[in-house]
Length: 217
Ligand code: MN
Image (cartoon, rainbow, N blue to C red):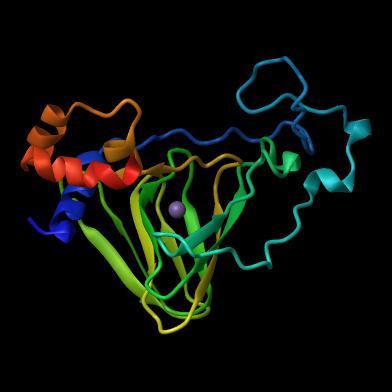
């Protein structure tokens, strides 16, 4: 079985299980996250508004290219509420991705967000897969200035298919979108999912499961 076929199968295997929840509307101008509070709420408790400064809404450095010298050939810089406490309760965050030629953001999903992506530089092939039972691939080759949407919770991916480096900027509809990288979770969980389960689920020999697990160990 080819790796690409297996990949499509992986997408089909997990894409039905997407979340439906959205973040609630704010009930005040802002609620800057107070990381020192011991109060447990959905998100973070609010800092005293009198203590809030502009720095609570600031993140610097998204102009700086990330290091793509890694097996995926990509680098993701994803400031969430943990880096920008002013995002708390606002239901939005941003991400920059750098890609070496051929670099990929492997199939993944955000359990708490939709994503809207713009190509800032280069040529990027992107796609998402609809949920069960259609499992339809919706994909496009994007050029500089093109914008593409990944619907809430669906599995999607990006690959630099141009000659040079590529850069994308995206916005996500959550202060903390979360990332579920399919290969990392299915083949790289700790402890590992029983290989009998995976072999049966993916309808391949256990040796292929072990091959798929190897890069994640
Ligand atoms: Mn994404």
